[in-house]
Structure formats: C-alpha cells, structure tokens
Image (cartoon, rainbow, N blue to C red; front, top):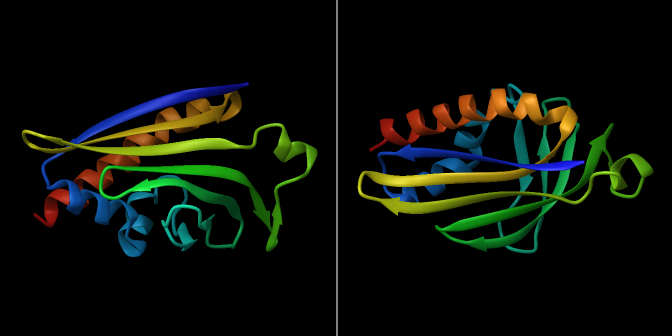
Length: 148
C-alpha cells in the first residue's frame, strides 16, 4: 500500500539558487548521499523527458518528469527499476507499486525559500524515508546557504 510522506525545509537562499542546487548534477550527488553515496542521475529535468536515478553500480530507478515549472515545482513519475543495465517497467513486482510520484515545491519565503517534498512510498520503505530524507534536506540546506 502506498503512503504519501511530506518533508519541508526552510533555506536562507533565493528560490532559483535552491532549485539549481537541488537539481544540478554535481550538487545532486552531494545532497542525495544519505540515500546512496555516489548516487547520480542521467537525463534531463525537462517536462516529459526520461530520467534515470542511479547508484554507483548502475542500478536504480527509471522515471519521467511529469511536470516542470522552473523554479517553482517539479514532479517525478517513477516508472520502474534498473538492474544490471536493464529497465523493468512491466514485471509484476514493479506493477505492484508503479507509478509513484515524488514532487518538489519551491516557495519564496521572508528568509529565502521553503522546499516541500512529497513522495509516495511503500510501507516497507516508510521508516527508511522518514530517517533519510531529513538528513538529505539538511545537506541541501547547507549547500544552498554556503553559496549565498
């Protein structure tokens, strides 16, 4: 069963700077390290484009950008897994959870930017996400505020 989790962080930096830091290839590797050290993506954040979120060994997730309103909002539709270089979007195991969405909203606030993350997850991943997402967002905050 899918559950929607929500995380919010206030960052003392301009919205466009936060957007660029969160989605930039090099800084993405840094703030996502609590999920998987060395994680990265291949593809673009353009609406409708395919994007792969990968671990250093090349396994990961296949997704598409469902919506992109720079620098306000981006929605990721996760469609399946990648294992040993092969995309799986049709197996019974994947169809049991896909698609799931992960969204980022960037709102201007008096002190800078508020980032709100909403993601659909499965019950067996809920604790992991509750433990890991705040750590990742803390790193994002540090990165953004260090470059002001």
